[in-house]
Length: 64
Length: 169
Image (tube, rainbow over all chains, first blue to last red; front, side, top):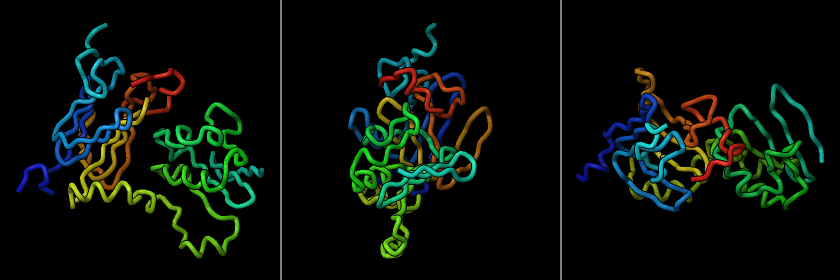
């Protein structure tokens, strides 16, 4: 069975401390801004608004 | 147009065919309403809903896009509500076929849906473990909205601030 389709996969949504939003497990990412849809398994999404690779984190939150 | 006050901050707005119910406490700032129909739903205007600015069918289509109970609607003629089975509730909205058929084709077991809203927050819907500040909480059939612009006063949650700061991305 495709691991990504395992219904027992727990989905975690984590607010990392002063960092991105981590999501892992059984989820579908629908990016309405860029009209893209994917099943990535794990993502780190920008929460500071400064990433050059939105919606993903690129570490920009560490820069002043 | 009739504007009536009801309990707390809730409002309702009517034209001659339907009444739109607005529950601000339920809003997660998904922004479907004003991106779809700014003529009717303009957050910068007071009152923010103008029921005469578009056709009833356009207003219904837009209210049905709202992912929460913040916006719902009913026919003014209660007989018509019975005919459609009072289907304008949140539960029906969550089962919008254009959303569910795709998802179920991928995952029969209801995956969590993560939506990046245009110039807006991250909307997360479903059953998941929410980890924040060192604590874990099991969420069932939940809908949360996470700030993406960095400006919310209610982090990690969205408070609608992105609209005022002109967040893009």
